Length: 309
Image (cartoon, rainbow, N blue to C red; front, top):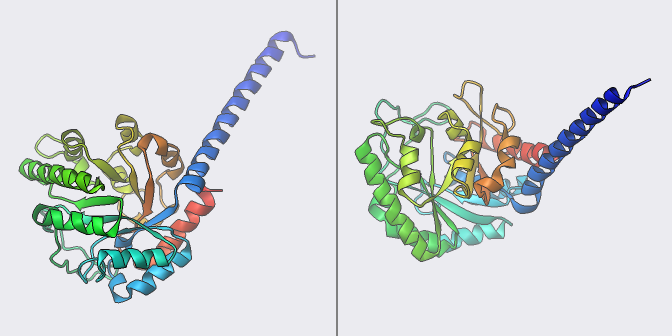
């Protein structure tokens, strides 16, 4: 026969357990709802940097056939927007049942960081980076291009941050671009790699960008993790500042990029914090994998299967 103390204890444990289960279910419902109802699955086209220029229309059609609904464009070896004018590129995307949401540009002319090697493709061949317009030298041209294409976001994909002088110059360019984008009705964002989270002359570049600009941020979640940061804590410290995300996965050693769901990053936890971040769009990205279509299919299946399950 159970006594009163045991009964009360058992009841309390049951109530606690029910509460925990309810909270767990609520959190699960929350991130599923965020994905299913509010956020289409997007793709950053840098994933296809090595191949898209050979067949732009065919590549985009295959991306649409997998199920992707939103596109973020990037650099092209053909110049412009993969050889298209902004309005023509927007028409191509829309004709395939997708929406063009954002475009990446460089903050300054491309240069290798000290000690860095020339980037290579999946087969180990050096990638020739063409001369590209950049915000330092061609800001208004790039803002006008985004405005003509009707996209809501323009993103600085990379900018020099190896010295404090470079960081200062970059922040000046970022602030000028932010002002120009504001006048054009475009939201300007900054995209990180892991380097912005490493100390430069006693300062953390990412902290300086956050505090000395009013930019919104496109947080590349994997690069942030590789840089030693917890994305959820960044969201809590800077609520509403991260309308765009890049999603890709990393192995345990934080060296190899993988399709989402095949690595070690806890995306369920991160997506649960999307309202704190202010996330509006997220884009799958895998930096020039050997088989880009296989990679983005695996990521899409994980997002729509596991995260939405």
